Structure formats: structure tokens, C-alpha cells
Amino acid sequence: MKRLFRSCLFVPTKFNTSSLSSPPSAGSSSETLKSHQLMIQGGLIRQNASGIYTLLPLAVRALEKLTAIIDEEIQAIGGQKVILPNLLKTELMETSGRWDRMKAEVFSVQSKYYLAPTHEEPITELVGREVSSPKSLPLRLYQIGNKFR
Image (cartoon, rainbow, N blue to C red; front, side, top):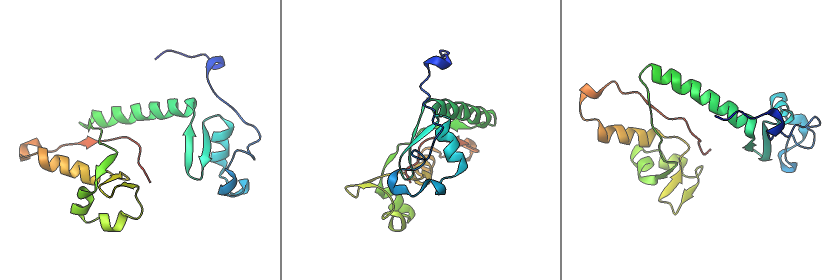
């Protein structure tokens, strides 16, 4: 990774966070947590709407470093990283019985696909389809990624 000088980094710091701590519709700044204010002041995040944030370069770097540490530790005990799709077929949740409970809360497309808030169904389906022998176990698969909630 190329080393960047502080003078070249995009780090928009704010010392008066009253106008940035929450968008107009999210409530008053008195409701904002101190950690939230510090992340805004430090140039880590900006809030777009209630619960929706933009991670700025410093936060992205911190997240990448944390992910690298977690990857290293999980791989040290035999974990293997997978990347599962974020857009899933509703059949998986219907099979598990969770679709009726969750369909009102997830973003779905044409009632055939949904943005995955969790990945229990696809990982279970993957292992069930691909692992046919007990000799393949134990199997430690993991994923680190965005969730849509």
C-alpha cells in the first residue's frame, strides 16, 4: 500500500458538530452519542440520513486493518473466507421458514430476490450441497461483509 502524507489525505475535520451530528429529520444533536460526535469531528464519518453513514478514508483504513486482523486470526485456526452474494433468492428463506416473518422488513425485488440481512440460509445451502462426507468436517467458513438491515 502506498503511504500517503497527512497533507494529502481527505480528512474533513469539524470542531463544531452541532450542525453535522444528525441530519435535520433525525432529531436534535443532544440525542447524539459522544462517540458519534468524535467520529464526525475526527473526519471518520458523515451521516447522510438516520442510520445511513458515509465512511471517509480514515474510517475505511481502520475498517480494512480490523478486517485484516480478524482474517489473520480466523485463518490461523483453519477458517476459510467466502464471499456470499448480497442479493439472494427468496426461496432460501421460504425453505427455512423465515420469509413470512422477515419479508416485511427486508428490501425485496419483484418478490423473488431480497437484500440479505443475514447469510445463514445461503451458507447452510452451500455446505449442504457441497459437503457429502463426514471426512470433510470440521469445516470453518466465514464471511466479513456488509449487511442490509
